[in-house]
Length: 336
Image (cartoon, rainbow, N blue to C red; front, side, top):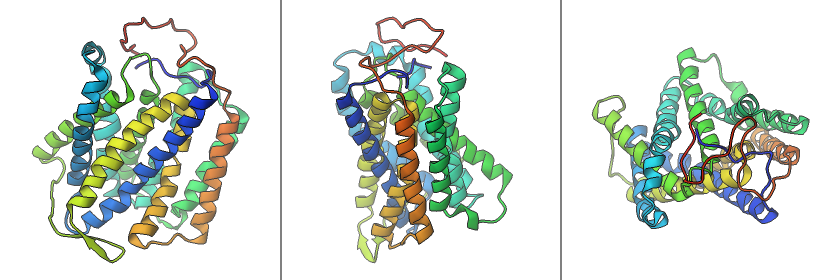
């Protein structure tokens, strides 16, 4: 695991503001995926086929910019091969594969709720691995945000749950938490766009192999997709899934994690649920209820409390965790 950009260090105010902007952009673009996918799923697409198109197109979009960003520094790929493999398998393909297995056994609300326990897992990891105990304000904010999430997802209306489905959902949560923790690492020398492109490429290959082996069903359709009563050609939402909800989302999410640290970035990721509700309203006509709106307010309040409870970040871009030595300057990643 690479050395993290730690919450005990502080970035300049400008970097913090930029990080907040990229975090909101990531949440908004990730949050669009559910509504876009819904119109395609109704025409016969399988979830795995949609994910493969999404991350495959994302990898293609980022390929040229990533090569240009490397500027001949190919040694960074060799030095970080294990990181790119883990990021693609766990944070991209693994997270999606686990989530789709979860929704096959659980109500969608429960599956999403379990996955979005990821910020709590990030706090626990930073505390256990790097002795970064959360402040009381951070813990309070986390409690408020999770309570709001319960209301947004209306999880109290569901009945009993499937234990195997919960295990799959926990797998998705691990993948989500791994994304924030891994994305916050800077000492590996990989530019965000290169990490995103490499992870999407690895994830595409892994999911493609899983489909070829019959582990996940691969079905596609050329039927028109319908959004709020308007039919559009299938390739338009597919293109949006690849360009906006994959390429743009992963790059902006990595940039946000490096600017804000894994803990704060993960809690800002909860905004994705709110954006999902907004896009479901705009594209599918699914209006949120008063309880969901109230939950949204609590999520926002919780994120604000978490931000207030975070220590100021210093001018250094990254810091070593307690008990480790500084990484060498050759851009190589450090094993956990």
